Image (cartoon, rainbow, N blue to C red):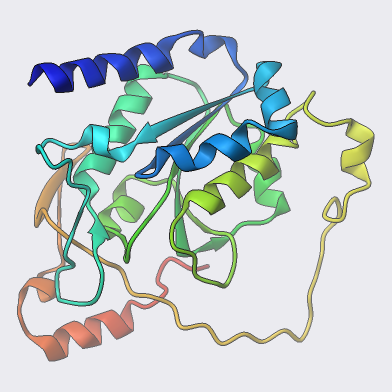
Length: 255
């Protein structure tokens, strides 16, 4: 490991180990755009919640968990297609580091994805009772499907529309959950809010074109001592079978 890389890793360790256990809810956000969060998380209610040590927000630069000089986090999709796909390896390394360094009792790993379950107030309430939420912010064309299958506990969407990345959804999730943590907002205010009771919408029909799972290099990776491989059909070079597989697997994570 080079001196520059050693200093970078040491800086991460020092930054996130200081007073970590003195906070309530921990949010760990994995992203390739760490600076994008600075403005929002340093204003208003979120800022006050951090100052009161009711929450702790850690931003992890995914590129710090790469092994090459170019700090590569993405690659072309197996089976062809447009755009680039975030690789499973650096994400897995980041998750392992966070779990090993910041051990808590109740923790969830959440992958933000357009094909995930729809985020709502009931989910926010459930998440507010955890000790830690690790959030994976996607970018580009998507995230290697092995992250959703073998690393994340839940795959979540914030709505039926497409954004350029998972950073805004991450902010929304942090905001929605933080408001429900005791001491952040007056209890009376929470009881009178719009979604404090169940909400039903009838006769609503939506036609949504959901994406199929994406995979990129490496072809094989060991996750929790098990070998996880790219589906063979995507490596076959048979474009007809690949198209059939993509069609049959559209929106498979949505419930």
